[in-house]
Image (cartoon, rainbow over all chains, first blue to last red; front, side, top):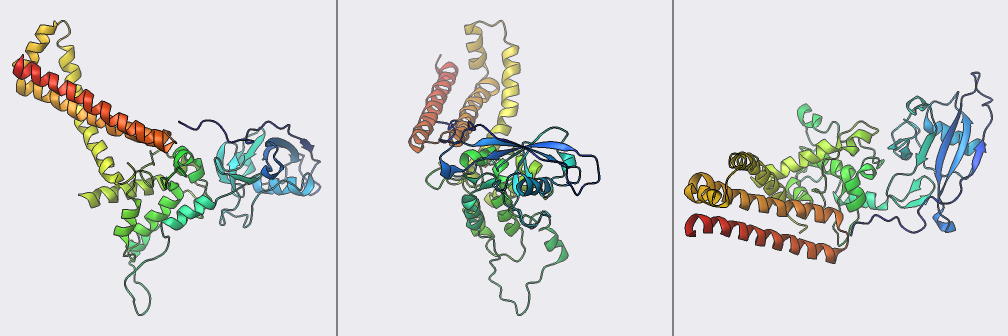
Length: 269
Length: 114
């Protein structure tokens, strides 16, 4: 039946610890103490996850990622999270902040309201440790849509594309594969990795599938559509739109999926 | 059940569109026969084969087909055990076929036989 129960050892039952920081020495403003409630899990230890509280001065902190780095630097070096570019380009620091998936590096402290800030890993993914999730399946699904140019032309120099043809890729190629969209989608939670190869590819992979379907230089449209013509791979999208509302790059995967469905219907005529 | 999603997608939308006028007609038709007895209703169906019996038969056919493919989506979404899913797909088709056949036979019987 419906899987409503959580996997073993995944409920937050362990007692969380509290850490209290001091006023930031580098800040010349009045201290602004804020509490961050961070999901802590170490599956290897066999213990259940817990939520630890960290109170730090954020008077000179602009982004949530900066706050996380301050917590790791000054209070608890064991807090584990991915980060790299700190400017919304690499997609490493995707996590669930105050209930919505986003990039910690582009989420401003001024967008977090005035209360505590809750930070959890991306939903419904296996947790490696704390805020780090295992995205192997997600990357597999991206690979499955063959995200590369397949052209039968072999031009002497470059493949020529008009401005109009190029513009069709705007809003599609910018995806950084942070997984915020797919892991915010309830249909992806339930069907992203179902059984017997029945799996919903999720908004991120489908956005990229559409990116290659829209590419004037690509000659494999028909084969790409054949692969997607499946009740699970494509048609598990029930237009929930969580993907579009959380995308930290402001892209619209839901529209791209609708575009694929439109291409399917036009092809079937 | 997993393959050829597009045919399923199109069928679901076309039947939904067809059900809009059929359902509206059905509701208004029933409202205008509020106080009728069973015999009146049978007479109403049998007496108007083109304007009542045929739209009613279409409503039954399209409605049960739409119900079957709609439930199929819900079963695929929520049932995680492959065996149970297969069984429910069979049951879903079976119930829709039997219920549809009984309804259709009733309309034919009222119109042509009774």
